[in-house]
Image (cartoon, rainbow, N blue to C red; front, side, top):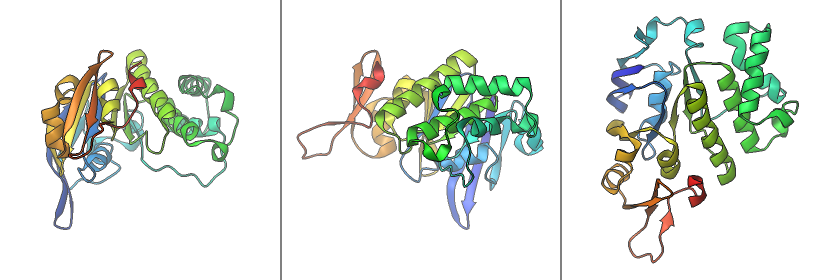
Length: 269
């Protein structure tokens, strides 16, 4: 379990994360939602130790984050940042192999190769594993980066807006793969996500943030309701039951048509 207690991030006098406390349970997909500037990415970065905290504490499986040795932490928790740009020419397989560095230090063993093969298979990259990253589409690149994180073989996988700049087809594909990773491999996935319908259809737990604070944290079914979403996003939502899932629509007063929030209804298939 990841335990967060009174976590705070301050830039000069401005607090962007304010006294946040929560427990992230193993074996689930937990999604951070909320408007821009809510502190979602900052919170994720502090949990992974990519960003220094201003106050509070994080413990991972009972060990305070600051007491983890870097080499051990890299085998426990992995993170994919929102922006990933490489200036070196790598094939997909070479990129995925970077995920094994905490174990191999650059000298790949048969176990490393097995983990790389599994990650490539899960992300359906077999047919392009020898292609260079700079030759790929946005969706293919994102799958390759997620495969790298999966090859790292950590219990906790943190993803900061993994659907950013993806079209609907690739976004659906990524979310289905994350669901499979959790259900079949027993991983724990924590992600920042903007699309409420993806959060609704694929998450087990949702953390709703606003202005650096947690407004709500509960099972997905309890968060995806009009009252909660209206409060968090300061706009009106309607929640519909479709295919066993909850689908959100929103509207603006004066408009005659409703819009499905984010993704198409095909995500429930």
